[in-house]
Picture 1 (tube, rainbow, N blue to C red):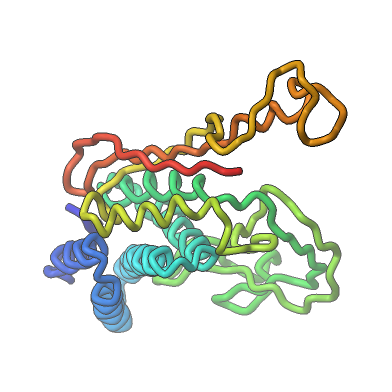
Picture 2: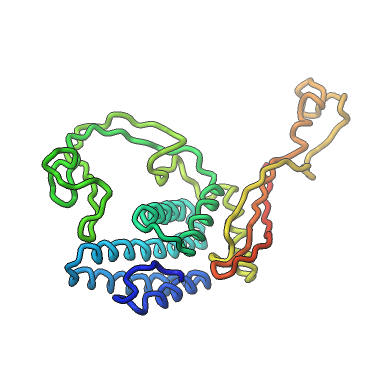
Length: 293
């Protein structure tokens, strides 16, 4: 079962809709996947507005979030194929946020959630982003999204992050007084705020090679379970060599062994891809490599 074990009676065709969406993503028909998601979310929203049971409303919220995950997944791969790498990074963070929310509200095991969590977390580590901007604000109060009262006060009966009749209580910042600080950090709360993103970076060649593998029908968005980067150094075939004890040709006055010999080996990043489709647990390695000078 690729969908969630809820609302089966209310939506008898939802499992088929999920499988169709996953097949469209796997076959790279992203627009078809997005259209299928929109239809399912519309049906869930319409049903949620007619039911009076709180638990059913909560289940509608959870399932809507499941389709939001599939939507983020389709948008992610569409951006990767378009070489919009920072945009794809933001969609990846959207998908990971969906997974965290589903993990909070849905406690049963699910093959789709397990597969995507494993795959997307490993993909996140492939991106070269290391530094992020972070802003600190002085806020007068945080307002509850459900009752509009101060969510930290005794007047608000809601707990931030909990579900109430199909809606999640969210703290909304009100009356921002001023910016307290602006910093460059390595472990931000919001990873979308990449410092100086650049889609032309060499590191993204690994993604370009991955899409070539898609084009060659060797794999597809849902046919691999995880990726792993392996960093080492290789001999640069274009490097000019000299006897170790001779003066270096660069004119530094140093011996070659104390100077440009260190450039004989160049950084090399190897990306190992573990193949294994969402509907097939078998795995075998596919390797992509990139050297950097």
